[in-house]
Amino acid sequence: NKQWLLKSRPIDTLSVENFQWHEQAIPELKDGEVLVRHLYLSLDPTNRIWTNSWDSYLPPVKIGEVMRGIGIGVVEASRHSKFKPGDFVQGLLNWQTHMLTHGDQLARLNVAEGVPLTTYHGLLGMIGMTAYFGLMDIGQPKPGETLVVSAAAGAVGSLVGQIGKLEGCRVVGIAGSDDKCRWLVDELGFDAAINYKTGDLEQQLEAQCPEGIDIYFDNVGGDILNIMLAHLNIGARIPLCGMISTYNDKELRPGPSNIGALLMKRALIKGFIVSDYFDRAKEAGEYLLNAYKNDQLKFRLEMHDGLENAPHVFGKLFDGSNTGKLVLKVDPD
Ligand code: NDP
Image 1 (cartoon, rainbow, N blue to C red):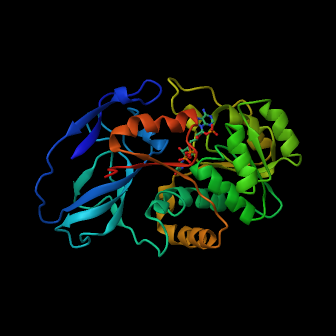
Image 2 (cartoon, rainbow, N blue to C red):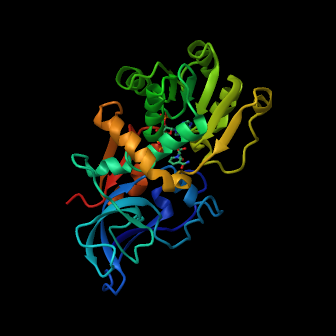
């Protein structure tokens, strides 16, 4: 078994220095256990959160433990009543090539006909559910409303915007390059996209959202959230999905100075974690699969090879060089 262990806690960005490569023989299978060979590892911004020393929505990964991660694998051997060899499984498989487990953190994956397996890392997996429930449950989109989404060309954001269009909203995406912005408008059908790294975001926002913002789907927090607060309409909703701009902060930053807008505009901001909605997975699955089969949702995966590259590839989420859901093919052979 090949593994990445967490060696030290990052001070800002998570890098290869924080990990240790480890190889060990796989122990013999006992009654009630299942052996999973990992196929794909999902690299997610939340991996960075789990390396802090404090509790988030999950306890921190301990120093010396295998790095936690979401993956898709195949059962190689089983002495467990729920799993048989050849089954595809998904769950917290961690940054390693194999896992010997009692199966508590695993779910069997029923792959729909004609759907590539990797789709379950994105559109039909945790990412799709995040976009769907955050927008539908908290955002409550109505036709004609203005929806703004940040990290719009990323995995979650690109789906949020497209679902917003299906629900009849005017959709404006915020992204970090002109190429990403072009993709949002030309390929995904967003009404407008703003490059937050060039020009004045506030001015561009005023130009693209002349009637204010009814829903701001926040993936980034920080300064962008603060600017959005100043442009909310009465009764606006903010699904607080992620705060990637703050994950590498060395210390807590001051709260958004425009927070008073929530009061003046009687607006709602609500954080959520996708696992809150796991008992409603079927609802999202049906909506997303239906839209996918009708060519109403596009989704990009960015696939890299080799578990050994996980720490390097992970950095792409934070410098913005990923163009889609970041996934690693664990063993390219
Ligand atoms: P993405 O595919 O969107 O990749 C991350 C993107 O974030 C980058 O490509 C970059 O795009 C943008 N970004 C990075 N740093 C900054 C910064 N400092 N300021 C603004 N944008 C930045 O990742 P995901 O779709 O997987 O995740 C998006 C967000 O959703 C994250 O905050 C994540 O934690 C959250 N999330 C929350 C879940 C939940 O259950 N609540 C579940 C899954 C994800 P750009 O080029 O545009 O800057």
